[in-house]
Image (tube, rainbow, N blue to C red; front, side, top):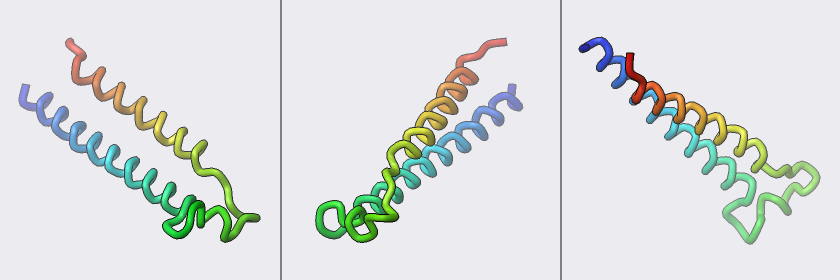
Length: 79
């Protein structure tokens, strides 16, 4: 029982760390893409090099959601 509890705690800490990293990754990329200057500053400064970060962020978020579902499944799984 103690081993299973320590695995749950370790997975919980790993899941929390992954969630924090995904949120940080999203915030950094949105801030860089849309800038902190005038509206859409990041888009207009280097218009020839600008790309929309939302598809990449959607992929990362979907992977994070899948990991969350796997974690919830593990927590509710009974032998």
